[in-house]
Length: 494
Image 1 (cartoon, rainbow, N blue to C red):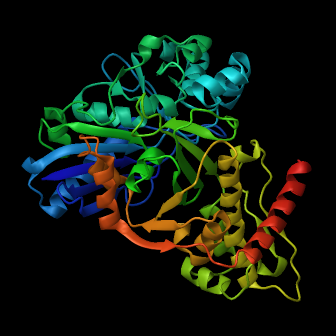
Image 2 (spheres, helix red, strand yellow; image 1 turned 120 degrees about the horizontal axis):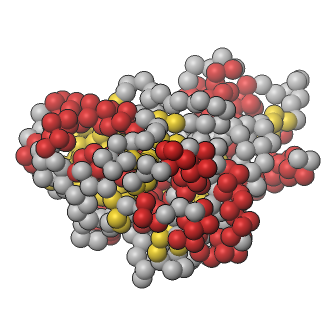
Image 3 (cartoon, rainbow, N blue to C red; image 1 turned 90 degrees about the vertical axis):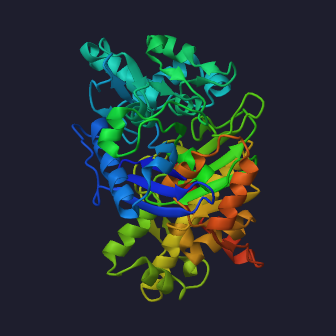
């Protein structure tokens, strides 16, 4: 028997086929092989056609089935992971009324900020655990204000994963998880955030029916069979946004467990069972995949916009051919890079820095002493220090860090980077060889609620290595204190 996992990103759609019994990944591939188009009709806008996602879902599924020669009658479940915070609006026929306003579109920032003040910071912190910000609810309000003729035609709004589930099953539904990532969930009342919808003047009936994220959410229909090759009658049994799903993929379910990603941007996703926040404007909070009213697990998500993009920029501009070459060069310099400091925040405003845009800074070069080795190490250390700085904010906001797990496909593969984070935080970093699509496929079979057994299979199948804190923390702490001092000088002058 097989499970299929879909990961609907903004760059590509990934599809995985896994063995239902063992969880073994049989094949994972993506469409398109380049990158999907993002339309930017104005500065700071970002849109995608939802049917473009569906087109690539169909292509990728057909390729997986053809290349594995899998017996399609043995597909027993489908799991869906997807880019968070996007807005899809459809008419009564289920057709999109406009392009999706996706996660990196910032047109609704001022709407969310105004709602944060209008509802009150204390109310937002207690009920929403977030500022309404630039999330799905605020994007829907933007459509209401700026495209009233489209708004009047809306039958339902959806998150990106909800739309793909609809295309597979013909049923329009959503989840608590999805609503929370749109800032559409009231944690205190454990219900739809009607207060925010009322504030925005949005009819609550535009919300789809809510289904559990581990449940039969509808079965594939004849049209899906025609377009994907998956037989009719296969249930969609799992759906979650990409960051909660990434945590699931890494066996992150309990208070004190942290999932980390060091891609173009960096993410620290700390699971906690404490529904309180002092940092609701710097940290995002979303319902985690195993949340129940009795087990109130939420993910505290801290994003670092400038992470891998900093290291990529450096590679492209100092004549290095690969990240491996850069890592080897960086190892030639000592801890602290002999005073060279890189402040890596050069990819827009940073929410954890109170939405300040301070740019990237290269500091303290001695032209008679420093070379490429110092620059490469200072960049790795600067990004690592940004992670540590963010984790300190999380710890100050009721998060506990007991273990950190990361995927084997990003900056955490760099020994200097992972050793620096592990040593300063004082916790091991476990590295796993998995992806969001594989996690979603495996989660399609997680209908019995046995997260412990599910996690044990991940450890058995995917664990690659573990970075342990180094015994001599002093030189790392000295370098971090110097970096933090430089950062605070810059912040105080902005």
